[in-house]
Length: 80
Image 1 (tube, rainbow, N blue to C red):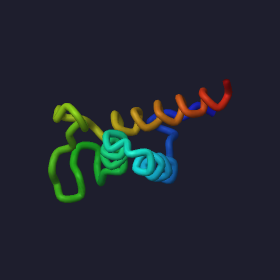
Image 2: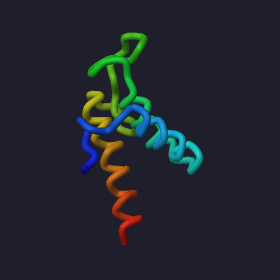
Image 3: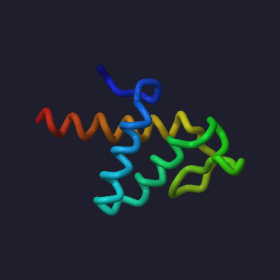
Image 4: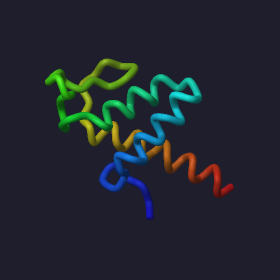
């Protein structure tokens, strides 16, 4: 099954976040934090979600797609 923003699980995002933190990839850690946000447009405190690195408005779904892309890329490397 292909991982997408719709099929990626919170557990997969948390695992990716843990791996990214261990690798020192703070940008991916931030994307994972957004992907795990409270709502589609706001964090748990009620602040709007912003894209890590750019500061532009972003949705939780967009962040979930970034995480799904990372997992698909990792799976593709394992297949090679």
